[in-house]
Image (cartoon, rainbow, N blue to C red; front, side, top):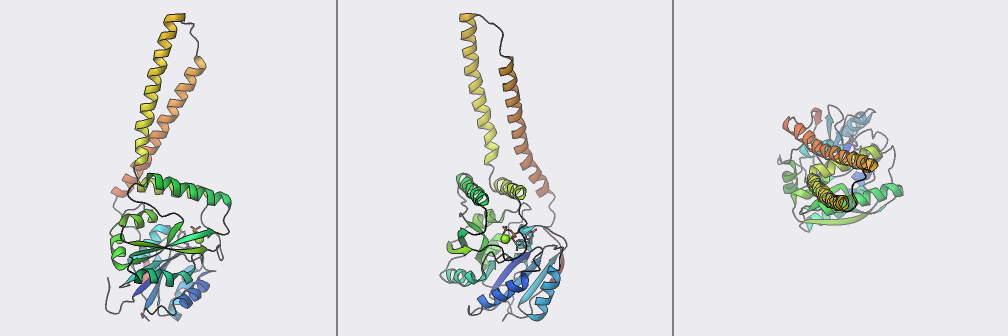
Length: 319
Ligand code: UDP
Ligand code: MG
């Protein structure tokens, strides 16, 4: 991918309906990258926005030769938009992934680059605080990370870390080899390995616009994370089944003893119903878990391209 005129650093920015923040974002990014001593470009990915995000990007591209624009054919979601940006990053040395809404402060990027200069391939930004987020969101996020840590095994997700990070060129090349459709980026970033380092920062509240996340989406995101990250839930069925069977045998033995000692007064309709309903529920749930995996297998076997680009305007100059 890299050519002689390639910039050393690419900053990849996925954006969906971010018309209000983009100009401010670009101003702060350019200011933050002022003294880094590397030629850089910024790759803006318009993820099928329904406002004038694309026009704003094209305006920036006209004014600033360091701007590249990738316009996707429709909204594909952040994970795929990010991948599209990474595919189009021309950098020879490193890429930085950052959100457009200024929740990831561009001023942290020099610290990420410093980590890379120390020799780390992955330098991820770790949040100190989650300002402007409700306690419920903080609590659910904490629970999610704890759960992922329990089931992660060899691949561990660093807590309080989003997609905001720097990747060296070889780490990026490794990441780009992973072409699965169900892309849980945090999991993929962790899976590739390479020496990694954390840089701590304070996460700001959104600068403008609104978050596209609600609890239903977050729930689905967690499901996506778990099912594309590990097959551990499939083992749950085995153990629940085993436990139920053992419980049933113990209950049967007790029942036999009671019948022989005291006769059988034929009662227990409510308990029978409770057991039948409980087991029915457990079986349905296990089928659902298998279905989650099956659906993902179905989607992967179609082997479709991850996205289509409507147009790509490369950056015109590296400096
Ligand atoms: N985003 C995107 N496509 C989408 C949703 C979001 O490219 O379908 C971008 C969005 O413009 C922003 C980043 O992904 O730059 C993070 O989105 P958001 O701020 O809504 O998520 P949060 O910060 O709450 O995780
Ligand atoms: Mg955000």
